Amino acid sequence: MADLPQKNQPLIAAAALLGTGILLKTWKPTPLDLPSPKKKRPHLDRGVSRKVRKARDGFAKFALPSNVLHSLGTSLITVGGGLALLRLVDEVVDDDERLF
Image 1 (tube, rainbow, N blue to C red):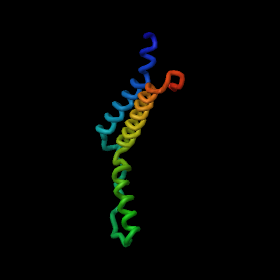
Image 2 (cartoon, rainbow, N blue to C red):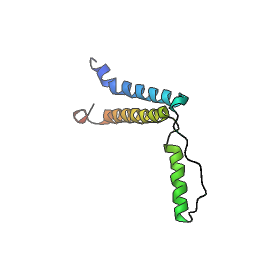
Image 3 (cartoon, one colour):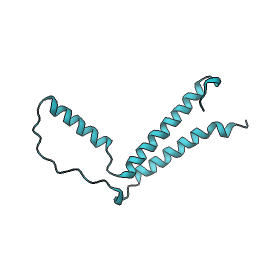
Image 4 (cartoon, rainbow, N blue to C red):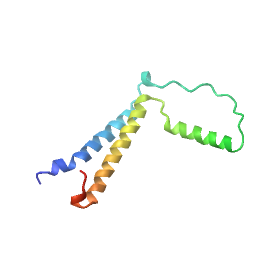
C-alpha cells in the first residue's frame, strides 16, 4: 500500500501530458500561426504521379499544423497516450518483467 502513489505516477504524468496537449490544441494564438502555403498553380501531372501527389497533399493537410501550439499539442497527446498505454500493458506483464 505504501508504493501506490509511486505505482500511479506514470498514469498521472500521462494524464498531465494529455490534458496539456488538448489545451494547446484548442488554444491557438494568432502570433504563432505558420505561414500559409504558396499560391496554387495548375498541376501538369497525370496517372500514378497525380494520385501520389493527391495522397501526399491530403496527408499534408492532416499532418502539417497551421499553428505551432497545435503541433506541440499533437505531440504531447501522442506521448501521453503512449505512456498511458505502456503503463497499462506493463500492469498485465509479470511483476519480475515490469519496466515501471
